[in-house]
Every structure is written in C-alpha cells, then in structure tokens.
Length: 241
Image (cartoon, rainbow, N blue to C red; front, side, top):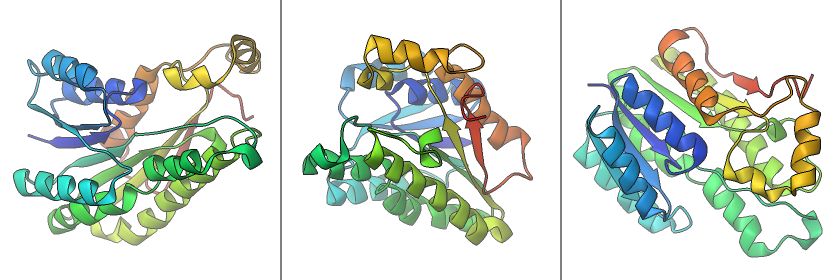
C-alpha cells in the first residue's frame, strides 16, 4: 500500500489532503501541532478507508521534531509521498512584528523541511522514486504588504522546491509546490470581514478556492503528472493575472 506523510493535517488544507489521499488508497501518517481532538476525529473518520496514524509534533522544538521523525522512519517503510502543508501566518507592519512571531513563521513554514528531508529522503533515494509536495502561497512570488515575513517564508519554500527538484530529478524523485491565493480556511481570519470581501471581489473568478480543490491538484501532481517537477502551480482564480 502506498503511504503519504502530511504535516499540518488538522488545518483546512491538511484535512482535505488527508481525505483525498485516503480515498486514493494511501495509508496516512498525519502530523499536527496541538489540536488533538480534531486529529483523533480525522483518524476515526478515515480509518474505515486506510490505515491512519496521528502524531503530535511541535515544530518549534527541533530536538523533539528530529526524535519524532526518526521514530516514524523506524516504524514505517519508505514514503511514496511527503506533503508539507503546515503553515502559520501573521498580519501586521513588519517593524512591529514580535520576535516570537517572526521565529514561529520560519519554525513552522520553512524549518521543518530540513529535518523532514533528513529523515525521509534516504528511503526515497533507495527506492529511486517518490514525490515531495509543498503548500506555498501566491505571496511567495508576489509582494505582500502587511505580510512581509510570511511572504519571506513562502519565497524560501518556493526556492527549496525548485532547487531540490533540480537536485533529485535524475534519481526519480519529483518536487513541486502549490501556491494558492485565497482559500476558505481559518487562515483568512487574519483579515477583517471588509478586507475579506475586498479580496474576494478582486478575484476574477469571484470566489475563494476550497481546500478540496487544493487537494485535487495535489493528487494530480502525484498521480497524473509524472513529467512535472520543480514547478510552483498557482491556484488563485486569476488573482495574479
């Protein structure tokens, strides 16, 4: 049975990813922060379809993260797919951003990529196959007033995607990212109701994306696009046209 690891599994996009991959028959390894109730409910909902294991790991504690990932490597065969969907955002003036929030943006959005690769990439290399997928954002390539540090992290994710894809392509491993615009998740709560309305009005398609649409693109990249690697696929309803 194919196996996928998904970070940020209790987030809106993470939950949609878990559901979509379960329906395709992937055994699930789900990593999440602290929402134990939602993680357990997700496990119970998807267990009738496929094996599901859930693991609470604090990405801000590097030693805990590395130890937890090493245990997962020892307990599981090589992954077929690894999806880094965990994300944290913060809205406000850059010069007023508190150090704890600045560090947290990197600790969740960027820093886990290195220990994740250290833990799971050797298995993919040995198998000479695998897919690595990141959830980025349109703000990784577009100026983001009031979200400067968030945009910095997503720009780093996109360079990681391109560069690692170049490094691994000849070994049969593909690396891609999805860059959503507005998605109907709790992350948009950083905006006021008026700001959300203005944002949605600026989207040519007139609506936000659903988490399920992001998950469908992830499955497409993994299952239907064997010649695509190193790409950042924008899903924004035409917002950045």
